[in-house]
Amino acid sequence: MKRGHALIVVFLLLTGVSLVPGCTPMSNKPYVEQHAEYQGVNRIAVFLQRWPVYHQLHGQGDMQLDFITTNTLFLNAWEPADRIPPRAVDVKDIDDRLMGQLLLEALRNKGHEPFIAEMVSGDRESAAEIMAKYLVFDPHVDGFLFCFYSPTLYFASPDKVPPEHQRRSYSLEEIAQILHPGGGGLIWAGPQAARSRPDSISHAFVYLSMTMFKAIDNQVLWTIAGSQVGGRIRVKVWDCPPESTEEDYRTDVAVVRRLMINNVRCRLRYIIPDAF
Image (cartoon, rainbow, N blue to C red; front, side, top):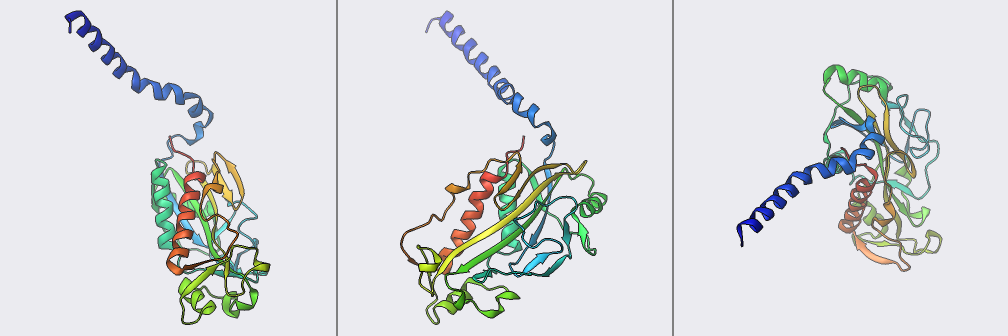
């Protein structure tokens, strides 16, 4: 290669290297300006509460009806549910430890530095009261994520649901034994429940209600309650397994548990927005 050509190549390479770092901020600038309130929210304290189908929050019967706000009672506010879906049972297998892992994994993948926070004990405290107390303990938190979750399985027939489902949770192993004593397997119904086998399950799902608050002023950054969304959220949960089928299919406890976990992991990937 001639000396002149070599100098040109070196110049182009150096120019390209120097321009690459500048491209991303330039292309991202309008997006950052549009959501300026989200900047600097890196260290996230996560508060997690299981909402069994047989409980209701004081003043709220269904977690999907209202967003978590600063006034939402998040601590010691459980009451027996006024109405329980006749085919629904709370699933033990999806617990605080597992749900916490899924949330932390999703938040880290979005660029945050999350951790599970312990709530300061109190009587029927709101999200605002919990945040205020926690900031005294740890003033370096940038944001708070409050999450209710409800792992629920639906029997195809209400006649098979044990009467204790109105006051206790069940493992998938217990459910399999109820439907198929001694067998341990399960049948996931493809058709609608009304046309399904009475010894099958029709659905297994983890309902979510979450709100992200900015620590400095309790501003809501994004929020979700069931199918309701607010704020900077990219929702595309229809791509998440399992898909509906036309036929019944035989499965087992491990598969149902894996499907429930993978569905949550997939939905969190779409629901939680990217951090800057």
